[in-house]
Image (cartoon, rainbow, N blue to C red; front, side, top):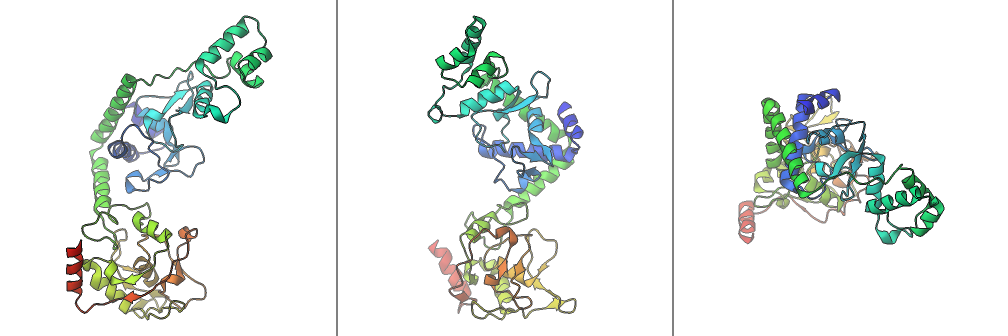
Length: 377
């Protein structure tokens, strides 16, 4: 299969090809074929391997993702059309939609760039394929480039390049409804064939995708859709990350489902809670001559069932951040669990937490409280 051969030539494996094809299918199912499939903020595990750190294009496993994407619809590199062109309708340079790119020439790039610019933003005329053809005809008839540039209100260098056939050639792309229908059909067929020929890799991907869709973070409440199946590449709950950016900080067992009540309560009972500006030392178990703290707290994205106490304190006060490392202030006591003293370097741009107004770790009748809460919902 020629598509797989391109993956192999790019130093990618069969599993990588399956993940790429599956990611395409997820986008088509969830986003549809019309809009851009921007990977810039798509941190779901379904898109693991896609990188947006490059300034101008989407990468997959450190390879340019665009040739792989075009290959899914049997569009390959050729000497006649050596440039990958992004259509003017595309709004993201990290778009994965195969209908928003094609192989063309530098002329096509210039024409698409012109089409993206609104006429009112330029004092010059917008160049179309028709205007470009008229310029060439008048030039062939003997008129000077200077005269043509003034007549059509174009910069001199633009008129010169058009007349020299260096840019703004007639648009060769055919994106009619019939063409797009064939493009999508061919892409879907290739994706299905890649997955069909590699059933084991396809099964592994489906399992990982379904598991990540049904996993819940500790802040999930039954009957709600938030904090469930929305995890980033580091296992962080993306719903929690949004609330952390808004400064959330709370120590309250009532914020969690009753399934988590006793576990959350037990953790905070092993912390010497003081004033908001004081350190809250860990009173629970330690190991390695008191150099590591041990807090029992199973995590969906960790193989072990124990974590460091400051990490769990951050999870249960500000939000679930998965495998991101936490750090105490330099002036903190050992194993300080005060949420106001714990930071994550990846969240340096976020505002400081708003503070802890009250601490609620128990109720006279916890079951009655949750029963009344569910009735209110």
